[in-house]
Amino acid sequence: MTTHKPILALALAALLTACGGGGGSGGGTTLPEVDTSAVAPADPGSALPANWQNGTFMQVFVRAYKDSDGDGIGDLKGLTTKLDYLKDLGVTGLWLMPVTASQDHDHGYAVADFRSIESAYGSLADLDELLRQAHARGIGVILDYVMNHSAAQNPLFVNSSAATDNALRDWYVWSASHPGGWSIYGSDPWHVAGSGWYFGAFWDQMPEFNLLNPVVLGYHFDNLRFWLNRGADGFRFDAVGNLVENGPTAWENQPQNYAIMGGVRNLLAGYAQRYMVCEAPADPAGFGAANVCGSAFAFGHQHDVVAAAQGNTAAIRSVAGYFATGQASNQGTLISNHDSFAGDRLYDQVGGNLAQYRLAAATYLLQPGIPFIYYGEEVGMAGGAGLSGDPKLRTPMSWTANAAGFTSGSPFRGLSANIGSFNVEAQAADPGSLLAFYKSMLTLRKASPALARGAYEAPVADGSVLSFQRHQDAQHALVVINYGAVGTSVALGGLKPNLPSVPAAFTWPATGATLSTGADGTARLAVPAQSVWVFTFAD
Ligand SMILES: [Ca+2]
Ligand SMILES: [Ca+2]
Image (tube, rainbow, N blue to C red; front, side, top):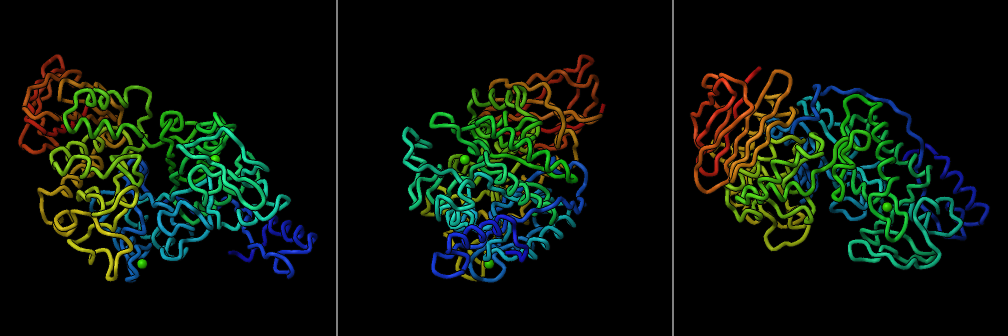
């Protein structure tokens, strides 16, 4: 809490004084002070290389990543000690799940204070140091931001719910009586409090803001500047399809949501080299548009990628067509994340089949998009032993064969079921490991502008084989993946004519292939079962 007295707090105090209660004046309920002070733009600039946001991100659950002080809870200092590992892997961006003070003390999406750090994670100074250290390694850091709702214990809501004439009443969505006809994700989103009914689609402890109130929107914009001014490199925006509700049958992807996020994008455009990506599972293309978020997670695509890796030819066709049919080439791609609606961890989805695992990874790491690796995916972390739902996906990072790599104390949650053999320590020195495979993919993307941000050309799904080309400036890349259980020979077209025996930039599992084209720009390539081929060449 700053000593800066915000206008609204002053107005609130005046109101409470007039009512003869609150504000610690005695005799009534004391309401918590709120900090809604304005924040002016003050861009510290960006030390990151150009196009950094077209690199590869790691989604990090700070609570589960690395504990620095033995309390069993991951923290910012712990994450900072792992930046060298992330840099060595080839990661150039981090998405931190909420690090703001929370009511849930777990995932963090019930935000109790939009301008302070969850105490178990550390301090604002620890975040500043993390940003400094990350930037020194060429790694940008984007923060999770939740505009749709706060925690019920957030002082803003405590004030808003105190009385119908509270100065912050109109900051949340209230009704004097129980509105009928609503059902969101199978539940009634209206909840009763002493002073009325409030709206909260995700949890009764996550009341939703009234984002049609320009003062509320202004408050969020001030919060965004608060973090950008500290050097944060952008945001991942939570639940942008749920911002504004216009009625029981008009509660998702409302026109105002797109306008609000376009305004946010304009705000970020006033800062150097910032990046934002939106979570909008019901409309990735709409929110990913250049005048809205500019990038949204490619939900749906991940299911096709996993099915393709398992040899499903219809899914291979869908994967081939995804970036050729209206999806922006900079959508955030993923295999899985912290939410069970997106799917289990990849290891569990493929039943531990490591060939399928590699094929799925290669697909999304070589296609267009901005890949978001879910922490631990690079070593094949499985879900938590004996856990289910979201907690199963949010276990401590498998640094070593037991909990010791994560904490010197007792971990806050059970460990991944396969930590004994799928951990960083076991794979770091093994050139045939999953970790080495991921590192190869990221190295390829870093070395090839065509793979990192190039156009998507000539996608072909031919039975169990996917091929496509990427093109940026004078750089070209050809990717061929055979998902099938048998080897085959594929015809390729639209290539540069008369290529003389270009050696493969990457092959798995075989080695030593070359690519030669005829005068008509065609080639034939023999691809063994379950194999990945990458060739790069210039104009
Ligand atoms: Ca800790
Ligand atoms: Ca809402």
